[in-house]
Amino acid sequence: MFASHPPLFSNPPHPREVIMLSKRFRLPNSASIDTFLAHGGYRSFRKALEMTADEIIAEVKTSNLRGRGGAGFPTGLKMGFVPRNSPKPKYIVVNADESEPGTCKDRLLMEYDPHSLLEGMLIAARAIDAKKGYIYIRGEYRYLIHILDRAIEEAYRHGYLGRNILGTGMDFDAYTHSGAGAYECGEESALLESLEGKRGVPRIKPPFPAQVGAFQCPTMLSNVETFCSIPYIVEMGGKAYADLGVEKAGGTKLTCLTGHLNKPGVYELPLGFPVDQLIHDVGGGIPGGRKLKAFIPGGSSCPVLTAKECEGLTMDYDAMAKRGTMLGSGGVVVMDESTDMVKVALRIMRFYQHESCGWCIPCREGTTWLRKMLQRFDEGLGRRHEIAMIGELAKNMLGRTFCALGDAAALPTISIVEKFYDEFERKLNAVSAPVPAPGPFPVLNDPPPLGVGR
Amino acid sequence: MLASYPPGRQRSAVVPMLIFAQDEVGSITPELVQEVAKRCGVQPVQVEECVTYYSMLRKKPLGKYHVQICTNISCLLNGGEELWKRACEQTGLGHKQVSADGMVSLEEVECIGACSWAPALQVNYDFEHLVTPERLDEILAACRKGDYVEKAK
Ligand SMILES: Cc1cc2nc3c(=O)[nH]c(=O)nc-3n(C[C@H](O)[C@H](O)[C@H](O)COP(=O)(O)O)c2cc1C
Ligand code: SF4
Ligand code: FES
Image 1 (cartoon, chains in turn purple, yellow):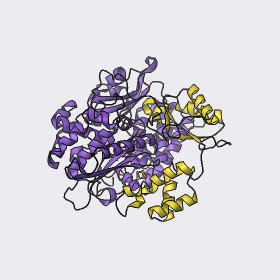
Image 2 (tube, protein in one colour; image 1 turned 135 degrees about the vertical axis):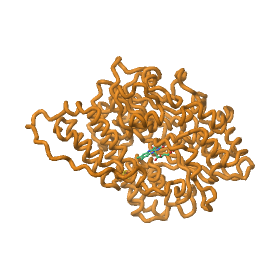
Image 3 (cartoon, chains in turn green, red; image 1 turned 90 degrees about the vertical axis):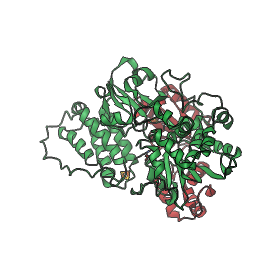
């Protein structure tokens, strides 16, 4: 109704897909509450109403559900951190800011199954005793705001939102909140600042949102897909959900296949799916039979892998960590042998320079300098000693910023310079006289331990 | 909108109010800043600091149809940059420039969440996926004539 584009899912689904989160996508009028109710909707919420808060949280812990927004933190633990007995009101906040380059999955959940998001919020609200929930959605997704607003209105009419829900005495209100264009507002504490009507500049952590979140109150803040997974955990039990995935990561994940592929698209795949089959089977292979050159597992913030590093790799948080990268948000970017990696590094850096909120000097200045240097390489004006300098400059950003955007800018850059050094060499300034090598670039001491100032 | 937020937290409505008002008025005018400040119970400068921070908020009006072309990674790999250059040539406009008749404006944007259907663009709030050069020409022609049909606003 509000969408001008053709369907975003493959129809029929790819045979390797495990259809759970996407089970209602292909139904006619899938976003309406009638369709939702006719296909098992709000049944998990009714079940959750019979459970205690501790039981719900225990199931989520058993499920091994890990946050789908990028960091992969265990959701059950996060729910457990919310001080339920605090006299302050508690909030649910949905991160629907989806702006990580390569990521386009939350859109499908909100477009085709908005009530599943509301159901996930309701179950979480029951578990942490929240009375209000906000869906913070990027401003560019205006049509989804309309779809969600309509779903919210339907839910009120059917008694799933409002006062005394289904006669149980539970109260819960849900609202959409529009962003206005700022990648940084996807960072959880910047999102909370933005929700309070300020600039999207992060807060110093700790305290984390679970303790001090929206309006300075305890808050469960998670990604859209994370909330949408909760009803299935309640429905099938944490154990069965966990069994869909791998050892420390349960369930299925919407995976966005993008880049050089014959069949790009968003597919629902179990955690632990092999990368090779992801590219060659589900993604339909690389156009023109070209070879794989580089692979990004989950959005532009992840270190880039070479084709060799993808061998035997599976789509799983721990497997990715072992290869020095991250599963991230599920935004897979496939790059074939024709790809100019200097251009890729430049485009990624341009993005982070544009989106840096400017609070920390290493991020604000680092992204600017790196963008300028990469631009010169792209124009064929780079000098040999500057190749290493790019890597060192980026390394000096690591761990020295308030939020993870600084790392997100540095990590892919470091990986590209290290793994595709020869491409930088090929773009060296051919005309200028050789430049004498400068003294060693000053590298600061080891970065502070992870967790400090993030 | 103000009632969505807890008592005393009406400042929260600043950004959503600005963006919905901008859609009506065309840009953020000084009067609008004053009005939003009054309704949300904040100082005008607190509204102003949001206007300058969020990239979708703007003080000058854009074209009736604002064409935003993504050139970020997934689109770049699928011809987003060529699409952007073509749009500039076709219209004679550059980044954030508006045509003389006020019909079309162009902007090179970061990822719009359509990476699996790259290259992608948005006309106002409508998504256009898997955009070919021919489709781009059609879109631009429709915008210039004023008969591009919007669904998402
Ligand atoms: C710069 C930056 C941008 C982020 N953007 C998003 C985003 O668009 N969507 C999202 O869900 N999480 C995003 N995150 C991650 C959030 O900070 C947070 O970890 C996440 O929303 C928590 O939800 P989860 O546990 O369900 O993953 C971003 C993080 C950073 C540092
Ligand atoms: S790392 Fe960058 S985006 Fe994050 S707070 Fe610092 S300046 Fe802002
Ligand atoms: S990279 Fe262009 S829409 Fe995401």
